[in-house]
Length: 458
Image (cartoon, rainbow, N blue to C red; front, side, top):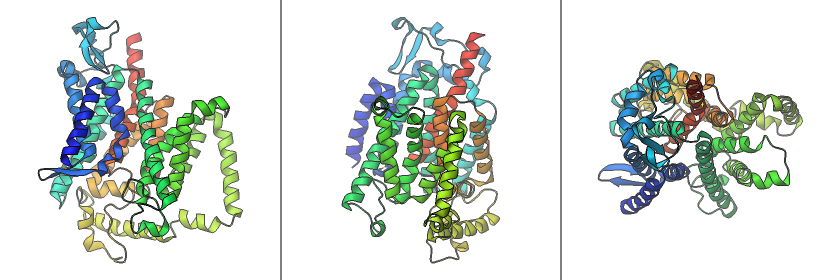
């Protein structure tokens, strides 16, 4: 298997070397490849991790001529930045070429150092400090190091690279390319899930009893966790236009993403994903002034319909966590709160929850899950109280950052993940960690470009 992975990584390296952005788009489309695992010696790894490391290495090689200047300017006053074209260097998505080979010029970074000021740098500092400390706190040191590397270091390095590329290329083109790569991945995952439901083939035990599809993943909820935010991306791409024949032709790709993704989520019976998607769509409608009245009317009519329909009892039971799944969550949260009373400051470390919860586990008819299935409790047990502070600071920064339509799309995808995270684990998973930081990079891209453009016009 390792030989196959290395061959795939080599082909990927060749493509990335010829065009950095095509490599980035392919990497984004292959987020579920973390499911393909192997070992390098005694060290476990995944195909996704090999592709990420390959991309990072090639990116640094291609950008090597400006690396020292980039590093120094990240930590300098933004008013003192200078155009690297004066040094005869130009950045392109195909690499670094001499200025004389192009008629255009780009600054080394327009407003890149401003990323590292204010609440953002504080949140990031807290996040990586707590993640590193959590390795020592964890009873599973080896597993903790693996999580630290796969869920924090590698995704954040990709975030830095994408953020830098946003300053050196057309931001909308790069954003749309990343969105389309996610859309391609969603179509593939959804298609497998739908075929799985139709044929019954490949349904793992015990999910085969209820015919809950898992697609390429190990469990049904993973389908909703991955497809939910991508559905929101697709929905925002098409919702603003009137439905005509031209509209259908123009938006066939995103319509396919939305339809197939939602069908797959329903077939996976991922109730939390359905609620998160619907809630986010409503929030989107309320956010835009042009659709606010229509959203309020439709929401009211939908609420009335549910209240008078035969499904009222079922919906209320699900939303108030009175069903079996809700009972499991409440039991988990109760035991986790008792755990945190004794470990409130540092938590129990990365990958430490299952071991640490054993003395507090009273509902023995339920298994001990890998995480508490609540976004705040997940962070608290893994990263401690400082991790919660980092999360809240980062959330505040994202909420208060000015956005244009493209960055707003990414922001609402993050909102969907957060709502879903009230009863699940929207981050501590290889593909979701990378997806989160890609969306954060897109969300923050507008304010940097805007500030830099204003700076150049002064």
